[in-house]
Amino acid sequence: MSEPTKQRALRKLDAVTRSGIPGALAGLFQLHGGPPVVPRELPAGNVWLSEFYIAKLHKPVDRTEWEMTPQTYNAYYNPPTTRSCCPRDLHPAGHRRLLVDDAIVYSYAGGTTIGHEITHGFDDEAAVRREGEPRELVDAADEKEFNRRAAMIVRQFDEYVVVDSLHCNGKATQGENIATWPACCWAGRLHKTEQYKAGKPLGG
Figure 1: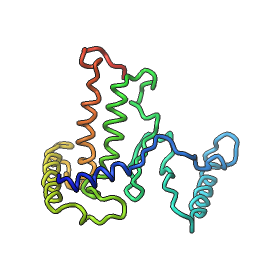
Figure 2: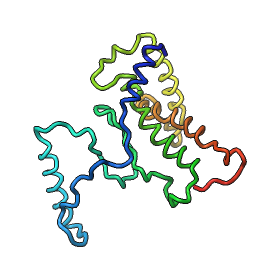
Figure 3: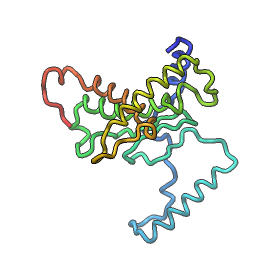
């Protein structure tokens, strides 16, 4: 990677906003109170959601808004807003948060989740562009090298067998694979704490 491209990539990385909990919760509590009753809550929820989106018309885009609830077990990267959102309580399922060792949290939540989402800002669809920047800002030589390495990941995942003779489609899943591969490498490094090296058991 040439120095100019590297500097542009670092500027983009610095521009990525990361959050583990929304600054403000959407007004879900505006739904009428009382115990949940599905036949009643579904129409009320649809009405609330419609009003929520209608209220956005002709207003500036809220770049801090989450596209999921904080308790949702998921994460995402949003290219238009250069924003990575990962719920703060994300931890291995089936384990109480306080019983999970730091090494597991760093590798699982930090590496394979947060690292994965941030890397989406540099995958085959994003390269090193910042929001609003044309792709031409990536040097031609760097573009060629990026495509060469991306093709290696495509071939690697093409070899994986899903079931019987059915293989993965590395081209179709290229963006996810590019984001996952370095994230798993980071997770491996983050997992190797002093406790791990000493052969001691890790919670979680």
